[in-house]
Amino acid sequence: MSELTKKTLQAITERKIRPVPLWVEWLKNSAYWGGGIFLVALSALTMGISWHALFEIDWAAYLKVGFSWGEILFSGVPLFSLAIFIFFLWGSIFLLHHTRRGYRYSMPLLTALFLTLSVASGYFLEGSPLDEPTERFLLAAFPQTKNNLIPSAKQQWSQPERGLLGGTVLSSDATDLQLLDSSQKLWTVDYSEAHFSPNTQPDSYEDVKVIGTQEKEDRFRAKEITSWKKTSREKEENVVRVESVKKREKAEESKKKEEQANEQSDDQDEEDTDDNYDEDD
Amino acid sequence: MLDASMISQFLSPIEPKEPSVSSDAELLKQARRDPEVFGVLMERYEPPLRRYLMRLTGWGNEEIEDILQEAFIKAYHHLNDYDEELKFSTWLYRITHNQAIDTIRSAQARPFLSQASLEEVEQFLPADEDIEAQFLRQDDLEKVRQAILALPLMYREVLILRFLEEKTYEEIVDILKKPKGSIATLISRGRTLLLKGLHRE
Image (cartoon, rainbow over all chains, first blue to last red; front, side, top):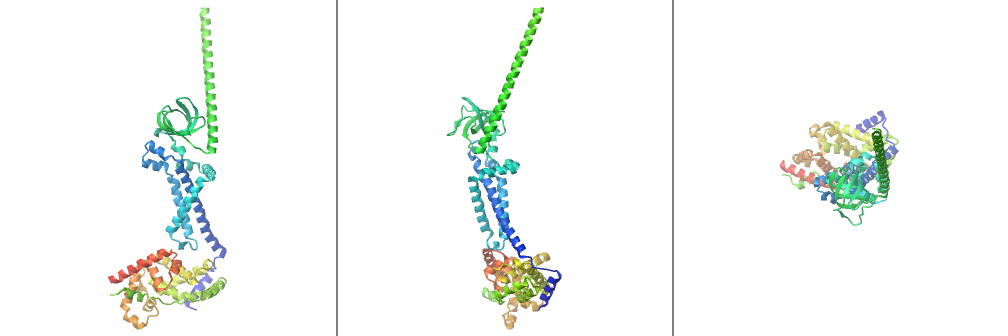
């Protein structure tokens, strides 16, 4: 037995070194696999969110109202979710590269494979029935992130000062329509010179996207009106929103009428009192 | 002036003869329960690993023994992580290589052979060369040795494994944990760099 072997065996005995149990080694390797697969799933989810945002945005509308390419990039491209996607993708590649035989595959190959996998599954997720529940879950779980950091049609069509206004029609007459935007603000939209896209009617409860110019605080002149397709859930929410606004309006109207009636009766009383004084005189 | 054929002669393959995989497997089974059996495996692989470390680091016996001891301890500690799809020697080379790289990094020193004695230097050279031929070509061998040690570690390790340790591409892939394409590229670039270095001298 060589000196080195003797010394090593002595060190093993003195340091009480034992082979790591098989199940621990198995668990360690499985953790790399599990972590990698979990991160691939997360990267597919973030890609799904990015696809959703990319499909939701009306890119032509940005160009029509004169946004620059830089502005379009920062307002329309979901940079935050894409950054998170890249992080998850990198993490999944790193973990799977560190599995027992993951090193045999080149990083560019793994990157191309996982990128394709995530982008494709994200795309299918966006178009699948899972899209709406996922969207609802994300809104409930990360409302601030979802509303502020990921571009949405709602954000895009809430820029009346830049010529983009969207909302639900409350009522309409020959030239104007009452529009309730996403922040519950009421707008009067002059559509006398507007071009309507096919299948677009300014009917009550209809969701529309309006390109035009803001004239006053609550007045907008429309150049182009397009129907805004919404999910069934969003439509239900809109009906509730509109009904509550209508109720509020009715209540305000009847209150005004009451006040006017009160004022009128007060005036009448005053006149009667004055007449009485005159007669006394 | 050295030419490519001379260099490849210097870098010609040598032993080690691999012990049969099945006997390694038998010993491994027993070693999981009894460290003394692991000693047999250590005895078996000490010479080729010692020579590999000498070639890779250019360090003397003392440093190499420290690396080897730590590598064997790690191998024993992670015996259950041994991937039976690999040769046991490949797995041991991997652990030893990683231990050497860690030591090189922690020492933050560029390896040089001045620490090694003359006898130790001989181990660096192919073992089947006859002594007379070695003396005749000592100058050239010294040049090759210096040129290899002057190479960046990434090229040095693949060239040593491929040409001096006579490992296959697949084995190098498993030892260095790099994809085959990267290994091929490193070998090709390493050879070019080695030739350039030798011609400069």
